[in-house]
Image 1 (cartoon, rainbow, N blue to C red):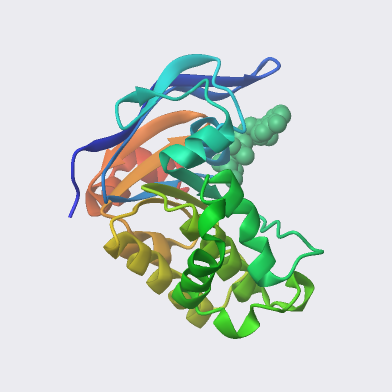
Image 2 (cartoon, rainbow, N blue to C red):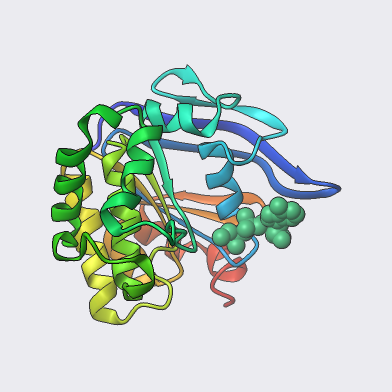
Length: 238
Ligand code: ADP
Ligand code: MG
């Protein structure tokens, strides 16, 4: 079930030098919602996630989270507010065990006092308990994705942006990650899934948003969005 408005980006623009990566984009997410964000490579999806999470600063527009303006807050303050992202390429701390890797986001989430229980819960939730003392180099690709989602979990997000967490995985591994994201959502976390694997994104999403060349060209019911002539022309190449 989706609830009241949780996240709102209003007419945000992001430029890199003279290049416009996002051009007056509006993007909203309701509490508990599952949104798919799609578009060709280079259309601005990760840039939007960067502006939302604070690794990038939008040049124009404004971003609100739970009614509070956040677009000038540092990334870790946004994490504390409940806005968390995962990365297109997992970046574990190579010198730390799987369990130790989760201490870092706990610290940034301001929950350092509750270390071990939160870590145990997150490892159990993603199915990595047996690997807690393993080093990241010894994890498979799908387990690295699970570690990344465990890192997100310990921050207790209300909104999670998942940027291409399924690239390079087998079908059954894609299904595992999908099931994990559905369980996170069932706990009340709103999720924005950025994904090229259409089977995954369409089965997951209650709403689809399409970016093309930095502009939002569609936003709505997935079936209608995918049937839209502009979307087919610009995105699906038909
Ligand atoms: P997507 O995630 O949809 O594939 P991105 O948001 O990563 O696209 O990139 C959008 C456009 O912005 C691309 O043309 C990319 O080359 C450009 N871009 C992204 N980040 C930077 C950066 N830090 N500096 C310069 N250009 C960038
Ligand atoms: Mg990207």
